[in-house]
Image (cartoon, rainbow, N blue to C red; front, top):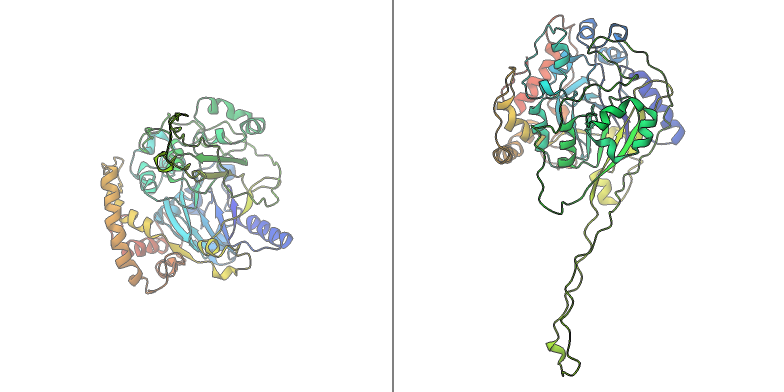
Length: 479
């Protein structure tokens, strides 16, 4: 499956889709899926625009409203997460995920879906220590403070994501803290010398995201936010001895201050900074194969010395155990951060990600038709969502979480419930999990346009959240 990955969108949907169409024409392939790593800016109207925390000179409608009203249609299935410059009221209405427009799906504040069996998980927002342990207390009309805090990632969502088994792809807006140590750091500092202080103090990026990267070990991790292209590879070697891993609730360092990146939109003090262009991407196919790290073979005790004067029988000689087979290659996560959508920027790349069917058949699936791409719920994420729904706090104070063992036991129980109750509700039956026939998102959530939201939430968007809650028979607390 050919997957296009975009860094920061900043409302430039027309330019992104046009760039993909040029690549398709030049390289003679079809892109099946577009992933956007935040700052999507899903502004439907002027009210949405006023809830977006950006300096005044950046407050423009962008292209999304055309896709919302039907003036334009997304030519490719597009899955997006939120960043720190969003129409936050719109994304709150689809807290658990949902259709922002036809063929454009928001993954939610945290979520996991499947696209033709490829598991795509993600976390919206950015990390700020002072809001990390809080509940979702923000209410409309937002003030200057809550307009910002609403997109700060919460421990609630990190804990939920930590219960996933390894997804194929993970999307974030922030970089995982310390990821720069796994790539060409010298080249990064040459291009972005103002990152040096934060890197030296281990404050560049999000500590909880690095915890998730180490725990989930996805094949791919895509990010944006810092407006530069950066590639890294993280090898997940089996530990040689028992180590203590960082709990998602206890990030390893203090709150990372905003890096002094002249290409980033800064809003903490309403500072306005100019942006310049760099180099445009040409559609890079990033390698997906993992490499091995040399291992020391397990030592084998030599046979005891033999007496040259002793007569020995063959069956008395102690047999030496054959050497152990070599260990499997270590898992590896390929990390790729991309720039924002501007001319002469490295903002988009196309990668090949095999689907489960392609892996079984040993083919690339390059000729598969675009209309065969199916967006499906991930059963494990549905179970996690049900298990953690009682802990979704709408107050500043967050309820006490269950311990990890209890949380996993709850997810296991909900897994059984999900498989027994969800497929019949979707009225699809049959099929298999990899194909997604039993879990199609469209069978539950459907996009509908609504009147301008005014000072409240949109009933049309909230209807998707209500349908999702009804599917899982859980209380819908999103209002």
